[in-house]
Length: 84
Image (cartoon, rainbow, N blue to C red; front, side, top):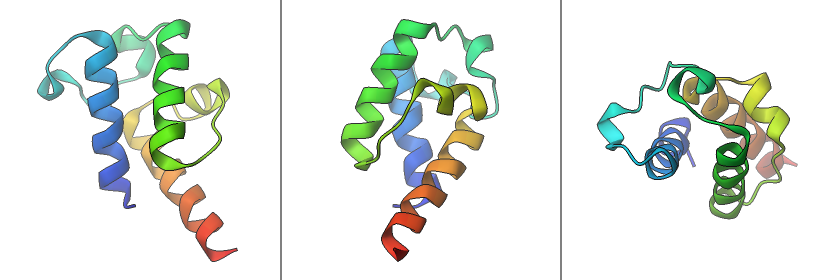
């Protein structure tokens, strides 16, 4: 799965949890700025784990605080796992 595909999953999940249209989710906006709270992070994290087959932690959202950064890190993690 490419970074773009992962980014689209993140956008869809965040739009769903925030109850806004997908086109209103900015991929370069910090999660804290768009209203994502800790309960929402857990929901999005669990959804991404299921769809990506990766184990995530809430720290991933704090270490990579935008969709752009998070999707890049998750794409790299998936690629490294596939190469192993």
